[in-house]
Length: 94
Image (cartoon, rainbow, N blue to C red):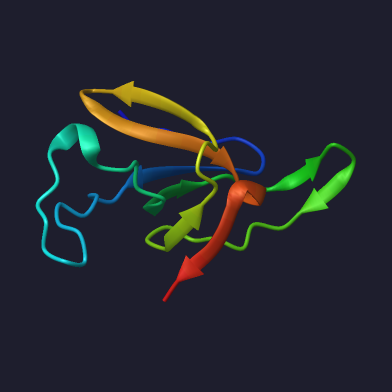
């Protein structure tokens, strides 16, 4: 199944969280923080949103950092995705 976001929304998939701290301590699943880095899978067309023209600056394959509690998490075909607005994305990681 393919997800096609509308307006200024993007579909992202979380990248795996680190399993070790910088000092080498292995973290159990419950202690891991939710990752804030993801890969863009689909990008909406942009257009007029709330009376303002939105130009989409993201493209499929970009690695991005986003706000900690941003977006809506959905599960489709056993995979977890997050759908959020372009404005909730803080930066593109190059």
